[in-house]
Length: 452
Image (cartoon, rainbow, N blue to C red):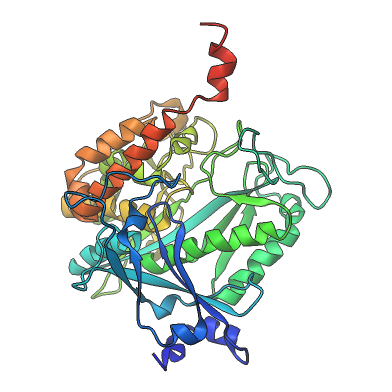
């Protein structure tokens, strides 16, 4: 790998130009989206073309326990072969030395992709599109909170202190003054993103106290998922520099809006380069409606992937900037599926269901998988919704257990995402849910202890 530096993206080469590279972080996303891997000296990295990690990293729950996901062979922790994707090489500018991060892909000893590695799941779905002559394009929006340091889980999460010395205020959506309160953190986010070669389309204040949104430019789904994966770490590091935490929980603060990862989709015909959602005269095509129908018909069964924790379901509350159903409409933010205002070339469909707590690879893969089923099965959507969708009934699962039941039965989705991934994911998430059910909450102690 003597010439490995020649394969780096321009931003990474610029970052280390004239510097002595100290370390390379070899990383991969686990099921929750946590970066796992090894940090190795740059001199050693230059001599290796792969490294090993046990496949058990994909069997862990968010608490560090193990689901019974290893299968019939039992829990023997086979080594995976992790190979670098040099196109993902990126600076780690918050470190004290000159460090690069490189995302790796996981393979077995026969050079087959590990089917339950999240990045491989997304690649599988993208390939299904390519096999049909389609190129999917996505644009994620990332919402998150900057909050006061919270070192005691028994205490509620509180908004961070702004530069004015006052706590961040709620109900200040799109306020530039509110954005200015977090100026030093945002400056570091911009600086880190520039070093890493990421293009931010904009940062806005959202409706929650200390809640921000970052929009990314549309592009290749795998590349955008890589960026969201990197951004979560980048934002956390920027926040820690200023005595606050960044959290991507779906619902971190009571009575505040939750945080979503809205996903915009369009599909390009590879041969013609045209958006298949728009016809020759600029009108909406059958493919446009099929894609919407796929989201309506299959998202309930896939919600356990887009809303992966018990906290995720606290976000789906009426009148709190989160959908409660899968109606679709044009330019209507109360529906779960929105068609933004755009010209024919930019016609796209926005999925507003996914929470920011989902693994970006899996959230995007699931959303594309639903659309793929709609396209290939030529499904038809419900009629366009008009009005306030919060006045209607909810049609998505409200608790994790129900969502897991639907996911376990969704054989069509399993075939698109990969049956082995679906098996492992279902087992791990069921283990997390059952562990949660053993916890007695403060609400139960307050209201039930002496009253029932």
